[in-house]
Each structure stands twice: as C-alpha cells, then as structure tokens.
Length: 108
Image 1: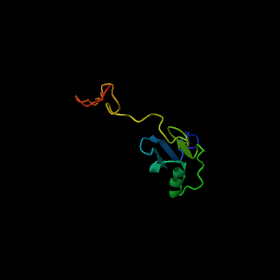
Image 2: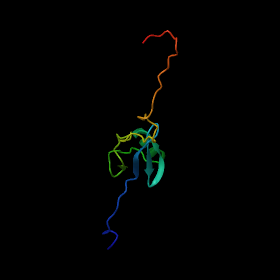
Image 3: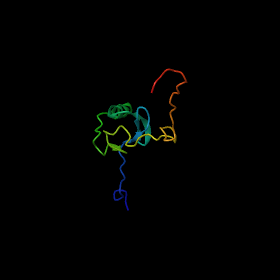
Image 4: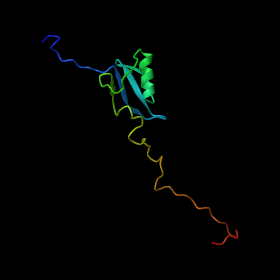
C-alpha cells in the first residue's frame, strides 16, 4: 500500500474537552495535541486559538474544532456536583427545640 492509498486519520487542530466541575465550570482546550488553556466560553476558545496564531476560527467546522462532551453551547455539567456522604441534610439530623424553663410565664 502506498502512502496515497493509506487511510488518513484527521484530527481537528482544536479539541475542546468536556466541562470540568469548578466555580465557574470550564473546558480545557487542546491545540495540535497540546494543552493550550482553559475556556469559560466560546470567546475564550477563540482567544486561545488567536494566541497560537489561528485567526478566524469557524467553531462549527468539524475539520477545525472537535467538541467533546457537548457542543459550543455546553458550558455547565449535566450532572450535579458529587456531595460527600453526610454533607447534605440527613434524616438522622435532629434539631433541638428550645426548652422552656419552669416559671417562664409562657403559655402554650
């Protein structure tokens, strides 16, 4: 098989990875297989691309940008953040009622 007959595997120059839980959430951006930065919006993706010399990036062109874990409109996670056991209200949690001392004069 000659080189011209060999199948070519094309990897878009920009890969925007899935949403990372943080406050605010972000997506990592790889350019040419190297980590290039963190994006909080499509504007950040464009800015990161410009910083490495890629101007006028078409975010809708799959030959240019590969979106992993959502598209250019996905900037929050689909799943709620994981809470450690016991960090949220437990059915074992009891709230003490304030006690009323004898002779306080309060009537129920």
